[in-house]
Length: 256
Image (cartoon, rainbow, N blue to C red; front, side, top):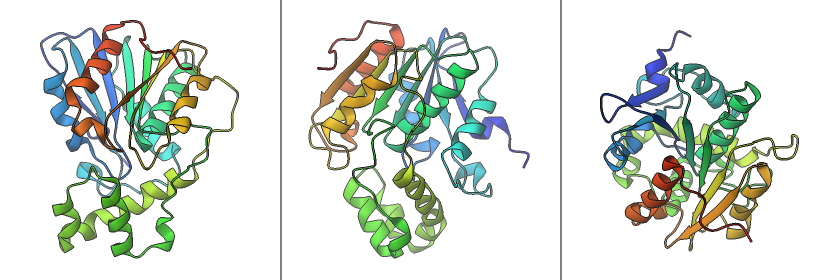
């Protein structure tokens, strides 16, 4: 499979030069397009990188993931060269991908400067809101996804478009259901910031809070009003936190 690295990791520059790169990993069923608009919310000095999973966009014909390694491996290998100041951010399942990317880079002696985990349980916590896509009809799966928010209902309601994206939705939610980190304690060294919504039905606050246990570095947690895709209504507050991490500002609220 000769996939173009630019199709695996999108590269969106703000200005002619950049000192920091922010790598964003999408949620289950998500794609890079959904996060491209974040370019306008970051300083020009920050390069925005976005992971594109198989089964969507230019990677539509790539084999669908069977485990999280199938997402992580291509992203790590396709990161642009010359990056020495990297912040990794994931949303929902993307936070688990972000954790594994950060872990792989740390093992390789290229630890990211920081990790931001949004709306996701800590990696070693069992999924408290399993979808069980293998048990659901297409209609039932679509209903479950709509209940979480964050997906354009127009796409899910259009039969031809839905038929195209359902396989990748099933694959993503299947691996999100079963993923659980069981390796050594505190495998990361970088600071970790966990962000969640007050009314998130998918990730209880107590599951979010345990992100502090996966790093030897400092950790903080921020809670904003909203549900699983809280940032859609809280973009200013969300990017205030993200840009603070990108700028290297010390964490504000330590874990209790």
